[in-house]
Length: 436
Image (cartoon, rainbow, N blue to C red):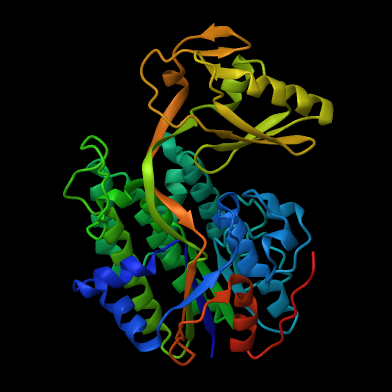
C-alpha cells in the first residue's frame, strides 16, 4: 500500500468546514466527518510563521531553532535530512511534486520536481524538466503576467502530456476565466496541472511514498479572503480589484475537493495524508503588495553594487555580492532608498555575501510617486513596480492534518515536527530526526 501526502498550503480547515456545512466540498466534508482533523503547531513568533519555514519542519522533523532555514530557497545551502531521502535509504521508492523549500537530494527518486524557488535538479523525463523551467518562469514573473514564448510552448506540451481527459473541461473553464481578467484563475490552472502531473507519475512509477504541494489556496487567501462567503469581518475589496460576487476562495477549495476525490478514486488502496503546515486568518488592515518589474535594472539605476539579483516570491529578492564589503555597501544603498517623507522602501537582511530584500512599502503607489536615494529625488516609482495584491490573509501557526489510515482524530494538537515520523510509521519504516 502506498502513502500519498497532499500538502494543501495554508488552507483554513475551519473555513472548509463552514463551506461543507453550506453544501459545498462534498469530498473534503465527507473525509472530515469520517476521519476528523488533527491540529499541528510549530512556531509562535509571527516573523517565524512562513510556509518556507514550516514546510522545512514538516519535511525534516526539526523546529526552526534546529533547522535554521528562514528564507525561501535557503534550504539548498543546509545539510538537512528530509523525509524522501530517509525513506529512500530504507529501500522505498519516493516521489515529490513541487515540495516547498525542499532540495532534491534523492539518489534515485521515482520522480522529483522542486518548487519554482528552489532550483535543484529535476528527476524525470525531458518533458518534465522543461515543464519545470516553464513553471518557474511563469511563477516568478506572475506579477507582470509575463510568459515567454518558450515557457508557453512547454506549458502546452506539459498539458498535452499530463492533462487527464476528465479535466479538459476544468482547464478550458479556468483559461476562459483568466482571459476575463480573473487573475486568480492562473494559479488554479497551475495547481490543476501539478495535480495531473502527480497523478500521472504516481500511476506510472508506483512509488511507496509521494507528496504533492499545492499553493494556489495560499496565494488566493492572501489576496482575496475578504471576498469569501464565510468571511464575516469588516473589510471588503474594491470592485476594480475583484468583482463583489466572486469567491476565489471557494473556487480553489472546490478545485482541491475535486483533486482529492480524483486521488482517492485512482488509488483507492493508498493511505492519504492531507496537511496544511499552517493556515491563514483574515488580515486586520489594508496592506498593498508591490514587486519590482526589472530587479537588475532598478538596482543598477539606483547604484546598488552587486554581482547578480534573483527574484523570489512576491515582494522578495536576493542580491548576491562578490564579498562581504560589497554586500555592506549594497545594504547601505538599499537602506538609503526612501519616500520623500523619509520612510524606507526596503527591508534588508545582510547574510554575509548576499542580501535578502523585501519591498515593504504597504500603501498605494500612484502615478508620479517620488522616492529618494541618499536624498537625491527620483520621479515615478510607479513605472518601476507592478501591483501584486491587497493583503487579505495573514499567517496563523496552527496547521491541520487528516489521515485516512488512522482512527478518527482526537482534539489534541501535535507538533508539526511529528509529521515525518507519522509518514515513516505509515510506510512501516523508522524515523529518527537528525539534529542540525
